[in-house]
Structure formats: structure tokens, C-alpha cells
Length: 111
Image 1 (cartoon, helix red, strand yellow):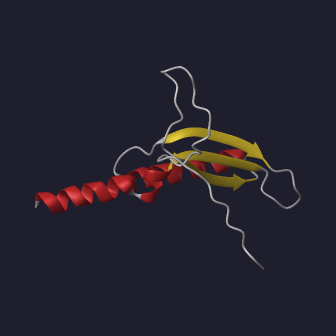
Image 2 (image 1 turned 90 degrees about the vertical axis):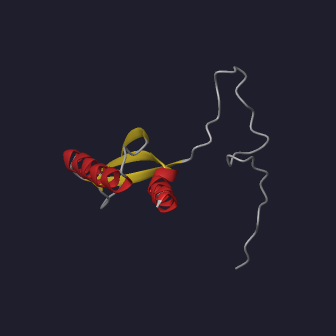
């Protein structure tokens, strides 16, 4: 099996340099990537409760509110799959622990 490499020209925020930019000065393509965190269950309240529990745990670990840009609800009617699919669209830097690392670095520099 051979792998083909496709070269993409991306700007500093990771989007195509050829992507049309919004024309109004108040509009922008934001540079912060977001990643979905998924909770699947046949019971919607259970999926929502698990997502809320995870969000609390993640915020405790992060030491600040986790940046969630959207909550997406979908369903999967394939046989044998959990019906409900709850997704929290979270800031990728928060999920990587960047705020934790920055605080640790500041604490080490201070003392």
C-alpha cells in the first residue's frame, strides 16, 4: 500500500491561503481550532449528564472554564449503535492543557 502525500498551502492559523476572507472588517476566520468531545447513549438525559460530569472534571483539571463553542445533538439510527450523540465542540488548546502548562511555567519562573 502506497501513501500519497498532498501538499497544502496553509496560513499561520492552519487554513488554506486561498480561502476567501470575509469582506467586512468585523468578520473573520478565527484561528482557534475546536475539537468535538462525544457522548453517545440510547438515553438522552444520560448522555447529557455524562457530558456535564466530564465538563466539570475537565474544568477542574484545567483550573478555569473550558472554552466550549457549541453543543451539537445528533442521532444514529443504525442497528446496534447508541441512538443519541451529544458533542461538545471544545477549544483544542484547552484540551491539550495549554493553560495548565502556562501556569506551571509561570510558577516555575516566579520561584
